[in-house]
Image (cartoon, rainbow, N blue to C red; front, side, top):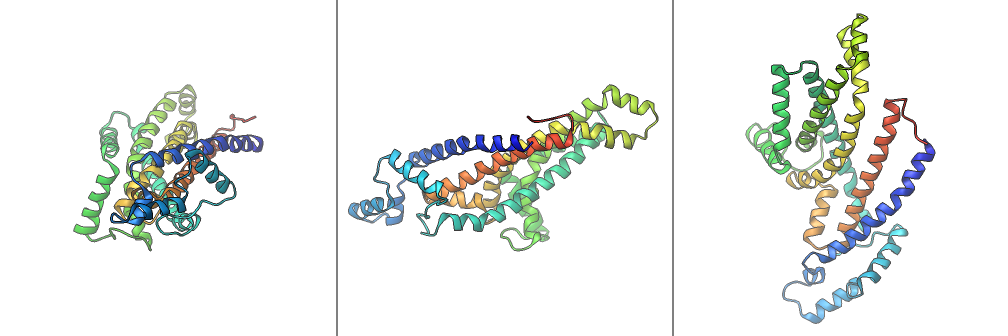
Length: 306
């Protein structure tokens, strides 16, 4: 297992390198000149050129990339064009907020999705099953920004139960986490239902029932664990959706995380911020996929990695 993990981590290096190159090139293709933004609309051409030279934007693209990779290998993400602060400091100030929001959203998604999926599977084609799948379809169809605004309108403005924006307490985390986890919960519910239905029709489940085992034991001990593999796969893939959805959620709820920092960096053409934020998200996605592969062996002992 440890050899497999080490191999996967080594394979992640070219992936991160490729992401760094693509992001580095893309942010420079986007219209807008950071030197002009810093200098202001009324600045002279000479002043703008001086800022561009100071930022190193007057050099060839490959030379800029080589310099950037050299700094990156030393652990230096550079300095923010907008604030002049080290990018690493700005990232470390925001990462805990994004991690807490993503984990809370994942907790909501897994709890609601798995519970709804199992409930539907043990009562297939019933009124409960139809209601759960209808709610799941509705949750899957609603964009994150719209559901977030509706959450604010209902629970913060009309009812006044929860704070609308900002951070500081667990109450501030409720609305963003529920908003972020809704669409993912719908996907997990549908996958859990499908996987559970397939397992419940298996021969060994019929044998377990024929032996006189209680239905709860059959569902929880025999069926649920064997249905987890595809569910874990979906949860791992949806982590990327949660991370990308956090960009919109953090913007709607004014949550000071990496997603909001990324949006601010894009609007300000702050190249170092955008590059570092995307790299952090890409690295998190790689590590989550590795964790999912390891969980396969934990859930199903028949799976071995060489």
